[in-house]
Image (cartoon, rainbow, N blue to C red):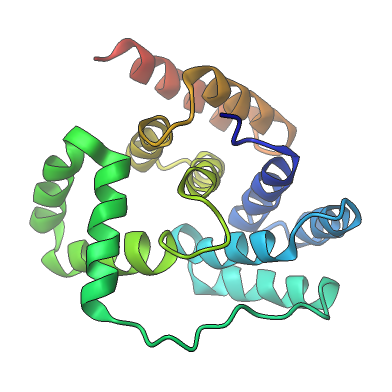
Amino acid sequence: MNYYKKDIQQISEISAYIALDKHKNTEHSMIEYKSSGFSPLKLYEAVLQTYLFCGFPATIESLRIFNKIFDKFKFPDHSQKYDFDYLMSEGETNCNLIYKNNYKKLIENMNKFSPDLKEWMILEGYGKVLGRKGLSLPEREIINVTILTARFYKHQLHSHIRGCMNIGVSSKEMSIIIESFNGFINKKNVSKCKLLFKSIIKSP
């Protein structure tokens, strides 16, 4: 199945610009995205997701740009209350899908780093954010890989490249995705991403 369709390609580019604090590029690419007639909901979801790896300031500034361009956008209904148990369960499910055999190791490591952050990671990251509708889990993971390449956090990038493939992105498509980053991420980071990808392919 092909996940890296034209809308996700453009969303990945926008996500990279957000990660790199390139506001003018972000605005220009959002205008192009709108001109292409792609779903504003998908882009909105992607912008919200950036707070996981870029923080609230970057996301707020990007939403300011988004709302200027998509001034008639209707926000999705979130009348359903946030339920802790549901979000933890959803988070554990999504995290298991992405990490597979490495899930237990991830939880052990995060518990050593910080039990609090481990719980936030499951609840916020994999439950509340990656569990939202509007984008599929593979599409969300592609966005994560894009941002982590732009900012280059080696260990997290390694995990999310592997995560992409664990949830259905083929190695061939993953190679195409990473190669496309040359258009909007500096070549040094893209080259390092390629090396990580090769090491994942070679490992069992």
